[in-house]
Image 1: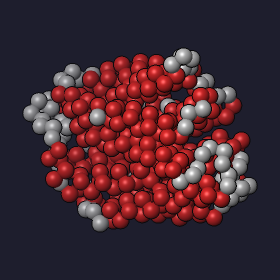
Image 2: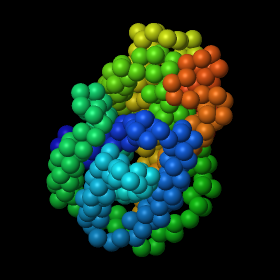
Image 3: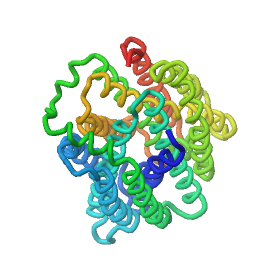
Amino acid sequence: MPLKTLLQYGLPGFPLALLSLPVYVYVPQLYTASYGWSLTAIGLILLASRVADAFFDPWFGAWLDKQQHPARFALTFALATLPVNLGFWLLFHPLQNVPAISLCAGLLLVYLGFSSATIALQSWGAILGHSPQTRLQLTSAREFAGLCGVITASLWTYWFSAAAVFQILIISCVLSVFAIWRLYMSHPAETVHASSQTAGSSHSFAIFQANTTRHLYQTFALNGIASAIPATLFLFYAADVLQRPDQAGLLLLLYFVCAAFSVPVWNWLGRRWHEARAWQAGMWLAIASFSTVCFLGAGDLLLFALVCAGSGFALGADLALPSALLAGVIRQQQDSGQEGWYFGLWNWLSKMNLALAAGLAMPLLSLAGYAPGRQDTQAVSALILAYAVLPCTLKLLAWLRLYRSSLTTV
């Protein structure tokens, strides 16, 4: 795959990833600190907005498959950047009298725009990737650009504030729209060919009758929840267990830098071993790194930095390999023309993972006696259990599901 094509396809992953750190990590802390909301209230709002948005994804994916316009992917991405930017602005500049409305409206706009753009980009990548090597290249390019976006957001929030990311978001969206349009102009034949196959497509849950499809989605769900819980609770862990909230930005930066450097490694391992086997190795690395969190306490900054480096390197496997596997499953099942449906369900599952992490972990923590700022033994033990023990258990179950699957035949 030419480098120019990889750059044009990968660049749009940058602005989409810029959203993740401010929205998923800083928004809960912003609204608890500014308005005194409880973790339960924030968790339930995040859960409700995520669930409402998640059910949009399969419908949108099926709708996208049925569109015959050859530029449907490029146009969808371009239009989706509008609600993304508006929603981001609302989240970090809430209306003073009705912050709850600003939070809910901002989340829904960001989620809907993000979903539309992501499904279009992923579906197009599945069409352009004609072989295991090219699908890995395209997925890795997109995820590498995404990690660069997260790293940029980490630096920007460390130097300035989460709200200041908005400036970079607008500029990168404009550049990405230009890149995605150039990609369409360079590869119109593949898109036209794919659109001609969608007319007779039947979008149904019958796709899960295939073992490979079912096993992949099950693995993705377990692994996704395992990753989403620590992401949701990271700032609370840094403040009340490590007692170094001032270093949270640098720790996140280290985590994502290690993930970015690992993407080419997982790409190489995926081509050498197969994506499924390489993903298994990534899960074991994550478990080995993150399980040590249980033994850390106040001031163990250097040891936790090593945890961030190891688990960050493992994150590269979660980003580069599963989507490439799904593209392979679509081709194996001869379901060309249903890429939007597959990735719509994929994104629905991804959002439900995040919704469950925020909507269940926070209220359960509150019931267990934890509240932000509490550093007594009971509160710290509850936070460590939720932050480290539960995710490692879920990650182990995900590895077991993947190990017993037939995905190595894809």
